[in-house]
Image (cartoon, rainbow, N blue to C red; front, side, top):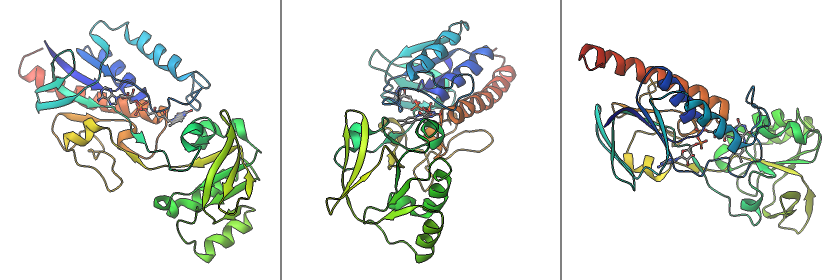
Length: 305
Ligand SMILES: Cc1cc2nc3c(=O)[nH]c(=O)nc-3n(C[C@H](O)[C@H](O)[C@H](O)COP(=O)(O)OP(=O)(O)OC[C@H]3O[C@@H](n4cnc5c(N)ncnc54)[C@H](O)[C@@H]3O)c2cc1C
C-alpha cells in the first residue's frame, strides 16, 4: 500500500492538514506518537470556535471529523525514521514500515525546562510562553517576565505588551545579561519593575505560583511567570538533516511549505517561533494544499489517478 501522504504529528497542524488532504480525496495516514506540546495546559485559548476547550477534547473533535473521510487513516504510533525519496518514502514504525509519495512533518517542538527549582512543575500551570493563550484569566494580577538571554532583544516589545494586561509586572534578567540604560529607563517610564538578581527558585503550592525567590532570599509576589524557554527539534527531525534557520526551526519554501528535501513538507511549531494552535492549524491547511496541488498534477500527468 502506497499512501499519497503520511503526516507525522497529530496536533493542530497535522489534524488540519489531514482534513484538507482527506477532502482532496487523497489516501492519508496520520501518525501521532504523543505527548502533545501543551501537555500541562488544561485549556486551549485563542482558537475561534474552540476557546477554552480541553486540549484532549480539541484532538478528539479533530479525529472525529476526520472519520468522515474514508481515505484518512489515523494511528497512534511513533515514527522512528524516514528514508527514501520523493514519490517513494519509507516510514519506519514499531509495527513495520509504511510507504508514501509525500511526507508532511507536523511534529511540534520540544520545550527545554530551565534549571530553576520548581520551574518544570509549574510549566503550563503558572509559567507560560504565550499571553494570548493565558493572560486574560490572569489580568491585573502580579506577573513576572523572565527574559532568557537569547531573547534579550525582544525584552521591551514583550514587556510593554504584557503591561497591557497588568500594571503589576516585574522583568527578571536572572543576572544573565546587562541591560542598556535606555531599556531600564523605558521600563521605569512604563511602570515596570526590573529585577536583575539571580533567581534561586519559583515558589508555589501545587500548581499555583506564589512568588519568585531571589539570591538574596527576598521573595517577590508572582502568580504568573512568562518566559520563552529554549526549544529543540524532535529526534526524528534532527536525524532527517533538513536545513534549519538560525533559530533552529525547519526552513521551508514560504509558498510551497516544502523543506530542503524534495517531497517533504512542514507545518506548525517546528517551523516558527510564532506558535499557537490556530497558527499551526492554518499552516497545516496551507502545506496540505500545496502538497496536494503538486502531487495531483504529477498523478494526473502520469495517469496514476
Ligand atoms: C503549556 C502550553 C500551553 C499552550 N496553550 C495554548 C493555548 O491556550 N492556545 C494556543 O493557541 N496555543 C497554546 N500553546 C501552543 C500550542 O500548543 C502549539 O502552538 C500547538 O500545539 C502547535 O501545534 P503543532 O501541531 O505544530 O504541534 P503539537 O501540538 O506539538 O503536535 C505535535 C505532535 O507530533 C507528535 N510527534 C512528534 N514526533 C513524533 C514522531 N516521531 N512520531 C509520531 N508523532 C510525533 C507529538 O507527539 C505531538 O502529538 C501552548 C503551548 C504550551 C507549551
